[in-house]
Image (cartoon, rainbow, N blue to C red; front, side, top):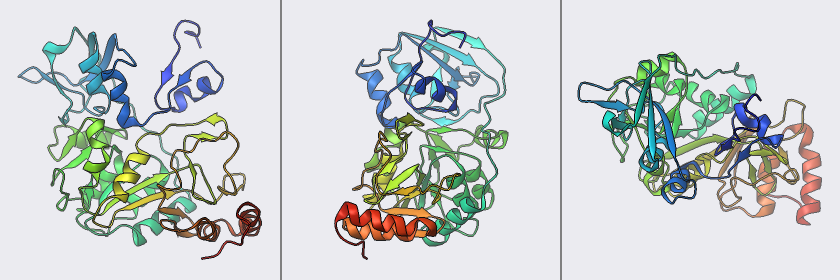
Length: 368
């Protein structure tokens, strides 16, 4: 608030730090896929005068690492007129596209500070049930995983301790992946793209995660244009993309960045990975998961999306919708079949109302 009227933030993804400002009109947001943000810089649509990035200290050859955030930073550095490196000894040194020589910086400033730690909430019984349903029914041994951020993706990872030879190709990952590596579940053995390595673009988690990343050749951090490119993703075996969302209508349209007109997050890489899983020739599984109800008991499976809600994932992209009541498979199904499948995984208290609403909307009864 102290800088109001001096700076105006323009975010490509909305987090808790800017959500209030965006919805109060004090800041802006750009709806965009994470993988396409670098194109804004490259094409000069968003010209960059100064790129301020955090890096590890240079090694004996003068090379720094962008550490936990290669994503769009690499293109920002390539396009900026002036580059400032904030050198943090606590930044993990990672391998991949984020290596940059100190000669490229116009200025370097040392700042020794702890890495930002992701604060998690206690996993609910509902989230644990969803995670177990996905792990037991939809994740195969040898699958290549992508997971979003939050308790539901974390609950899936926690339920995979008996799986074997899993691979990771994901725009981001957190502590749950480290636990699976330590349990011997993640080997990346069957991956076609960089076999034997975890592939990511950015990471956020605890000190345990950052210690795991530091100087670890098992992990490669890549430019998000490449990591999130659907044809690249699809080359891996059994791609299983696990993401969460806010609301799903009875035809399969998914709201994931807004609650009605209120902006909540962004597109991220959800669609890129759902598509990559869908076109994977080796039994890919695009999965969206959500609790059946809100904390106030309102159904998250709805006749129509809230007025003003944006569709992040279209009804044509959706394959699996998972709630604590089961798994709805929508791919190749008609609108009335989709409505029937989704009603079966809605909260029992809302199924009758959803069935009536489906009849009003579709002019026929939902049926399998």
